[in-house]
Each structure stands twice: as C-alpha cells, then as structure tokens.
Image 1 (cartoon, rainbow, N blue to C red):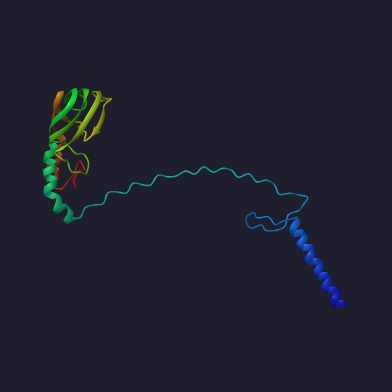
Image 2: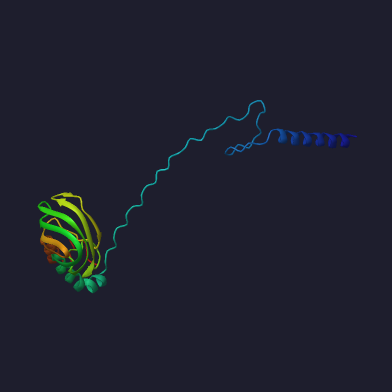
Amino acid sequence: MKTWLSCAGLALLLGACATAATARPARWSGLDLGPQDATHPPAQTQSTPQTQTQTPPAEEPEPEHGFGHVLLWYIPNRISDVLDIVRARLRVGPGLEVDVRATELLDLNLGGYASVFVGIPGPRRERAFNWPFGFDNMAGAEISVIDATTHYGDAPHYGVAEVGLGAQIAIVGFDLGVDVWEAVDFVTGIVCIDLEEDDL
C-alpha cells in the first residue's frame, strides 16, 4: 500500500511539473533558466542599439631594404634620379593649352588636351619606374596655388621648385621643366639618402 501511494505521489508530481513547464516555459536570459511567475510576465527588455566604431587599420610601415637590394638597385635608382631632374615630353593629340611655371607659387596653366607623349617624363615622386611614353590628358586652369585642373593617365608630377614651360597647339605639344629639388635628391642618393622616397 505504501509503495502504491509513493508511486502515485511521484506520478502526480511529475504530471504537475509537466503541466507547469507547458504553462510557464523557462526563460532564456543570460544564465537565468528558472521558471517565471505567471502573474508577473517578463519585462520587455529593449536592446539599446550600439554604434560600432571601426578603427581604420594602421598603415604598415614600408619595409626596410636590405643591403643586397640596395646594391642591386643602386645604379638604376641613380639613373632614375638623374632623369627626375628634367622633364622633356613631346605630346601628340588634339588640344589648346599653355603652361608657365616658376615654382608652385608662380605658375599659370590654362586649356586642355588629350595626347600621348614620348620623352623624359619628369619626376616620379613615388616608388615606380618612369616609362618614357604614356597617355597625358589635362583640362582646366591653375593659377598659383589655386588648382582647378583635372589630369588623367600618366599626368606629370610638378614640384614646388620646378621651373618649366609647356604648350599644346592643335595636335602637337611639349612640356619642358627642371626641378632643382630633384637635383638635391640625386646628390643625397649617392650616399643612399633618399629624400623623395622614390627609390625602388
């Protein structure tokens, strides 16, 4: 009799637990898995939108070249430094333009053209090889430090100390210039001091 009562009590207990679980499902909130009170429904939690700020990746410093690399590229870099001093482009293409430069503060550039060029391209001002030919398109106006020109293709890199002259008449044009600062870069490059940071 006692065994029967024990089994019946156990069955009632399990049934009550099952009914309670069905009526009041367990809530999942963090680590809280306990039952909820039916008379007190769970408060609606409002998730505050969090603004994710992404920090831009830090620029990796350029790797230092080893002795073998410097030795291998020493002569090509010095030749490039010499060619950086002078600009002598011959252009072929439609346009009308005039360009007079006596440093960046005293320059005038008006007009436009779409051309191909051959010759000494002028200063690189980046770690790249300057090919003696390419495309050079320009349109707009520049007076002193006010620059409203747009360039496409292998546009020239004019320096702050460059003196030069250029023009485009009908289908033929030219761009000549000398950059004194590039001469300084060549001299310091002899002792492996790259002021313009354009050595390969």
